Image 1 (cartoon, rainbow, N blue to C red):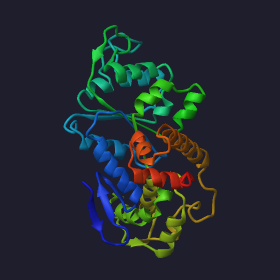
Image 2: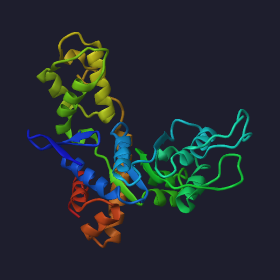
Image 3: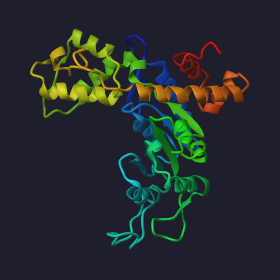
Image 4: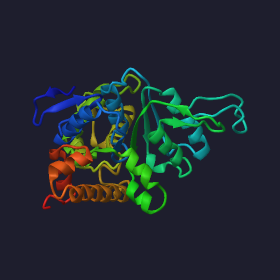
Length: 323
């Protein structure tokens, strides 16, 4: 459950390894509590480094499947054959080097949850197999001939536009609709800047850097970090703090401990194309839901699997609040 961590400003809360004082995050957590009670496939939309696996784990831990396995795979890190074997397993002799049979992720997670990160990178030839798991709760191992039944809840995540993937022939439309029965939106760190200071303090207090500890952060360094856009989101923030703690020499984090791009002395990481792609798909999905709901925001929010308040906030961010 959500609990208060401080009374300073907007209430800071923690939730299954996440902490935030942003209303958009609190709305997300409320949505997760409702969604966890169902077995519907969930799609998590968010930029790289924003914490999508933490959201997936929260869904699992809150669900009736919490005592069963939670297994994750990043679809962007394995090639087609290796990914097929990782997901569905293989029989002995399925390919060169397959000297023994191996269970795949779905079989090992039976009764639990499978998290497919970066599902937008899933090769086309594997997509029909995944669709079969969703439609029939069965799969066939690589090299096998007999289908096996499986009982899993599927949670997926992407930082890319699946709609664009469908338009470009890289992603099946039927699979897109099956995996996003409900969609949750994870706000980027730049849209919740009030979270930067508490996250900084959390990382300074908890990161292990070989026994070295920092007492805090200088005000000018904090101001610089709050002003930065964080294209790598919470993961980038964590990495910056970890590097500063490992390499810094003073008792507090200073401007000199920060990388040049944070101090405005170097080019920032390119992130606008990815941001724009996510926002375009957000706009398209919200507009589609509003059309189907004939402009009724409550019904549109229900179609999207989010609260009416979250829908209003997303519309405001995307410039749709005048509709």
